[in-house]
Amino acid sequence: MVERVLGVISDTHIPTRAKKIPRKVLDQFSAVDLILHAGDVVTIDVIDELSELAPVEAVAGNMDYPDVRSKFPEFRVLEIEGRRIGIKHDTGSYLGLSESARWLAAENKLDVLVFGHTHRQLLEREEGRLYLNPGSPTNPIPPFFIRPSFAVLKIGEEGIEAEIITI
Image (tube, rainbow, N blue to C red; front, top):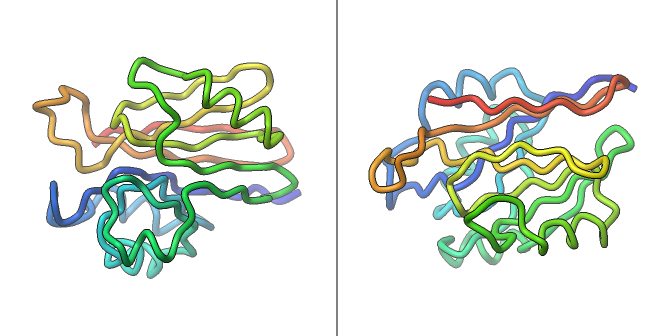
C-alpha cells in the first residue's frame, strides 16, 4: 500500500464570508494527492480552484448555492488505499462528536468520517475510527473565536494519521 496524502477542508464560505482561499491552504494542498471538501463551498469556483491543485471529492452543505448542491451529494463514501472514508457536512452537534456521527460511521463501516458545519476543529479516535472536522480556513475569529484551520490526512501501511493546521 502506498501512502496517500489528502487535503481536508470545509466551510470555505466563498464569497459570502471570505474572498479567497488562504495562501497557506493552497501551498499545502499543492502537494496532496486528493482534496476532500466537507461542504459549505458556496460557489463552484472554489472547487474549480482546488481542482487545479489535485482532484476534489466534495459534499454539499447547507449554505451551498444550487450549482454546488446539484453537483455533489450530501454524503459520500470513498475507498482509498483499502480504507473507507465518509464525508458529510453536518453530523448534528456543536459540542463535539455526536451520536449521529458515531451511528453514520458505524452503519457505513467507515475508517474515517470527515465532516464540517461547526467551524470547530475536531480530531478524535474512537473504537478504531477517526473523526475529523478540519474547521474552516476562512473562519473569522469573531464571532466564533476559533482559529481558521484545515487538515491533512495520511493513509498508508502504518495506518491513518491526521493533523489540523491552523492559519
